[in-house]
Image (cartoon, rainbow, N blue to C red; front, side, top):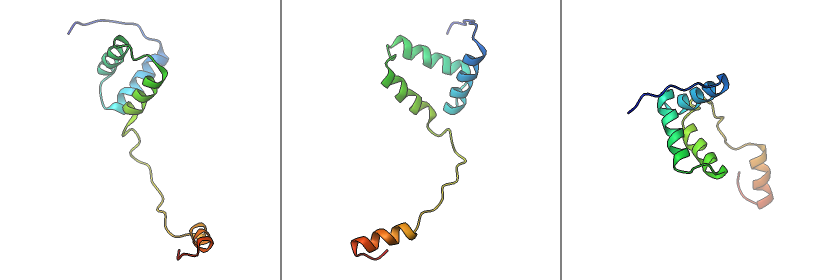
Length: 85
C-alpha cells in the first residue's frame, strides 16, 4: 500500500466519517472502498444507492420497535371478513 495525502472539505470528511462509522471501518478504509467503486465504474445512481444501503446495514441499533398485537384496526378488519381477531 502506498501512502497518499489528500485535502478534503469539511463536509466530505464528515460524510466519510459517517459512512465509516456505519460500516464499522476506518476513514482510510472507507476512502479505499469509495475509490475502488469509482475505478470499477460503479457510478450509476442505482449502484450508488445499493452501495449506500449496504454500507448502512446495522447502523441503527438502538431503535425500539413497538409490539403489534390485536387492536381495534385488526378487530375491524376481522369483522369485515367474518373472522376472529
